[in-house]
Amino acid sequence: MKRFFITTAIDYVNGKPHLGHAYEKILADVLARFQRNQGRDVLFLTGVDEHGQKVQQSARAANKAPQAFCDEMTAHFIALWKRLDIRYDRFARTTLEAHQSYVRGCLQRLYDEGKIVFKDHVGFYSVRQEQFVTEKDRNADGSWPEIYGEVVEMREPNYFFVMEPYRERIRERIVREENWIEPTFRRKELLTLLEEPLEPLCISRPKSRVEWGIPLPFDEQYVTYVWFDALLNYISFAFNADGTSRWPADIQLIGKDILIPAHGIYWPAMLIALGLEWPRRLLVHGWWMNRGAKMSKSIGNVVDPVPYIEHWGADAFRYFVMREMVTGQDADFSDERFADRYSFDLANDWGNLVQRTLSMVHRYRGGCVPQSAEEMELVDDECCEIYLRCMENGQVHAALEAVWSRIQRANRYVEERAPWRLAKEQRLEELDRVLVTLCEAIRRIGLLLEPVMPTTSRKVMGFLGEPEDFSFGRIRQTEVLKGRVISPAEPLFPRKEDGVRMEK
Ligand code: MSP
Image: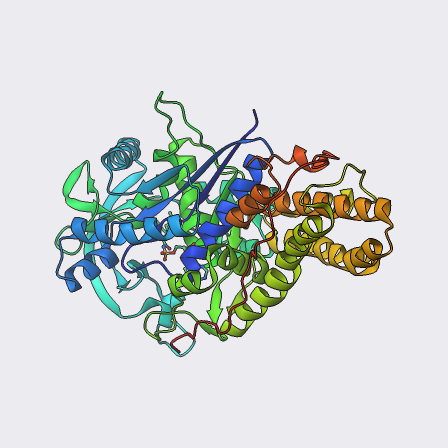
C-alpha cells in the first residue's frame, strides 16, 4: 500500500491554541483524510513544542513548575484537536523521554564528528525570538524590528552547529527541486540568503539563563536550543515500535514565519549533517489576519476558535478556514464572512440540497429511493479530476470551489426539473429519475466533503443508509441507492440568528 506521511509545526505551549494553530492542524487533517480516502497508509504527526525560554517564562508568570505548566497547556491543545475532529496518528511532546534521548544522541554524534564546536559568542540577543540577531537584522533607522521584542547585548561561550559546509548543497537542491517549497515564490528570499556564508548556529543555552530544555550530553551546564530540539521531533516520532522509521515526510506543513531560517536552512543543514533524507515537500501556509491586522497577543486580537466552534459547530469552522484561505496566502478573519459562508454555502447550498432531496423522496416515494437509473451525472469526472488535483497539491479552497459548483448545479437542477410539478402531472418515470439523480449526487458530494466536514458527511451517509466508508472509489459507483429506504430530512446546518463577536 502506498504510504503518506504528513507533519505540522509543533506549537509552543506558552499560551492556549489560537486560530493560526487550528488552521494548520485542520489543513493537515484534511490532507491526511483525503489521502486515507485514496487508500494510502497515512501517518499524520502533530504535537507541541514544550521547551525553551518562552515556555519557561510563561510557566514562571503563572507560578507553576514548567512541566506542570506544559501538561496543563498541552491538554488545551489536545482538547481543541478533539473538538475539531483532528484525527492525528501520533502526538509529539518534546518533553517525552524517547524524544529527549533521540535529540541527545544526535547532538553527541555531531559533537564527536566535529560538527559542533565550542566558542565565545558576543552579540545581540532577541529575548522574544530566543536567538542572537545580527547587524543585518536591524531596520534602516538602526532600530530592531518589532518581531524581535527586546534586544540586549550579550557575551556567552556556547556550542555552535557549523552550517557553512552544507550551504552550497542546500542552495543547489532548492534551485533544482523547484517544488520542494510550495508556493514556489517563497524560495526567492531563501535563495538570496543562501548566497552569503552561513553563520554557525548557536545550539546551546547556559542553564543559568534557560534551564527548561534538554541538557547537552557532552556538557550538562547547557541545555539545547529550542529549535534544534523541536525540529528533531519530525524524526524522533517517526520511529515505529519495531525500530523502522516512516521518515521522510511527504509533506511538512508550516507557516510562512518559520520557513526562514528554521525549516529552510537549519533543518536541511541538520539533515545533511546527520545523513538523513530531506522531506519531500515543504508546504508553507500564510497567516490569518484579524481585520487586516496581524493577530498578536500584545494587541489582544487573537482569535480563539472555541466560541466559534460552540456557536457554529466544528464542521462549519473547518469549512470556513479551508474555503476562505488560499493555501500559501494570507487571509482575513471576520465574523461577517463567517456568518455569510455559514448561511449561503452551508445552510442554503449544501444543507438545503440534502434536505430537499430527502424530503422529496419521503413526500413522493414514501422514503424509498426509486428503482430507476440516474438521468445525468451531477458530480462528473471533471469535478472529480479538479478535486483530486487540488487536494493532492494542498489547494483545498479550489477543491471546495469545484464541489460547490456541483452543489449549485444540483440545486439548479431541482428548480429546472421541478419534481413537484412532475408529481402533480403524474409524470412518475421522470420524477423517479430526478429523485435517484439527486440522491446519488448528495451521496457523491458527501464522499468528497468528508475530509473537510467529517461529521456532516457521516450524517449524510447515515441518512442514506450508507456505511461510513469514504474510499474515493465509491464515487465512481453508480446506482448504489436504488430501492434504499432513507431517513427523513433533518437540517444539517440549522439557521442561526447572530454570530460571535470578536473582542476587538
Ligand atoms: N514551536 C515553533 C514551531 C516548531 S516546528 C519544529 C513555533 N510554534 S508557534 O506556536 O509559534 O507556531 C506554530 C505554527 O502556527 C507555525 O507554523 C506558525 O506559522 C503557525 N501560526 C502562528 N500564528 C499564525 C497565524 N496568525 N496564522 C496562521 N498560522 C500561524 O513556531
